[in-house]
Image (cartoon, rainbow, N blue to C red; front, side, top):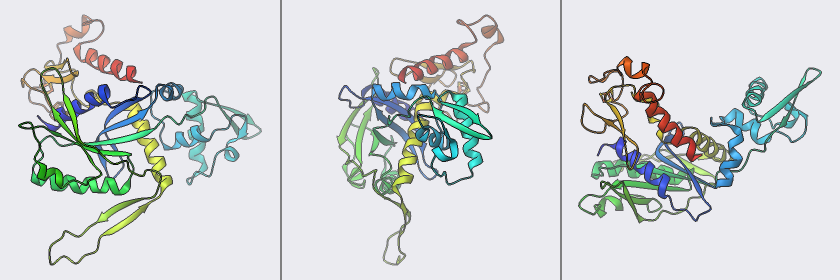
Amino acid sequence: MKEFGFELRVCAWAERNWPSDGERATVVARQLGTKHRRWDTVVVETTPTGLTDRAPFGDERLGSDLLHVARNAPASWAYYREALPEPGYPWRYVREAVHRAEDRGFLETRRSGNRIEIRRRYRYPGWVDRIVAIENKPDLDAAAARVLAEQLEHDVALGLADEVWLATSTTDDRIEPALLEAMPVEVGVLSVSDPEDGPRVEPIWRPRTLDTTGPGTRILDRPAGGAADRSAARFEYADPDWKRRKRLEIAERAYERGWRSYVGTMRPDCRGFELRDPAGPFPWCEPKGREQTAAECSGDCRDFEPEPPGWRDRGWPIEGGPGKAAKRLLERKRSRRR
Ligand code: SF4
């Protein structure tokens, strides 16, 4: 199975089955992280109450500037420069964020002379309990394991996610133990198989919980090893405030995108595009007779054929062609998760 399809299956499984004690809810997203590191799958653990409290801030994410306003806005009227902490960037950007926050409906503003006063309409909730990062590697061979082990060591050292997992395919009912031994012991391992009735995922090694509240270490460079290599490793310190902010920004992006946003970069308006259940829905390309990747399903695809205009004009099946219907279906599923 290609990595894209594998990734969607891990997301679908996590959404339905992520270990929960009954009080938990999850938000699952793909391809999120920081400027230097992008995780394949991200699971944000929260609660139904946390999601309810987050809802008044809208379906779109709050970026760092809006988070600054949302988290610090006062309950009663105050001049915005006195109410909000020093942002670390020019106040004019804060003023713009204040107006956007008002447009988004979670902040009120009024003028007092030439001062802008603000008051929050909702308290920004602490809705993110834990963040789990999953690296997907269906075909784990020795070379892939070496690269992956290094990336996962970075994740463990930084401690931005509470847990880090590796998900890999189960082949011949087993995963080569020698490959797993190369992985950091703190990283959990999920074994994924894909029978007809939907993906099955089994934890075969439990991860350790990482320290997300303390300082982290960014590994910038490390010796390649070998007798002749006398170079020193280089590290950088990641302070807890940076980690706290990044975690919230990642959770906000996950909340906005979910994992079905792949449809936004594919061509559901192609005549050959289908969504197939039961385990997904996952994309399917009829002309290729297989699941297509997000990269190949583009306007450059040689098999691309636009939906016949008649499909759209006749309002198939209710409004718009199948492409629009596919987008609506995925958007409905995404909204239901929130
Ligand atoms: S033919 Fe190409 S563009 Fe059309 S669904 Fe298949 S991969 Fe996508």
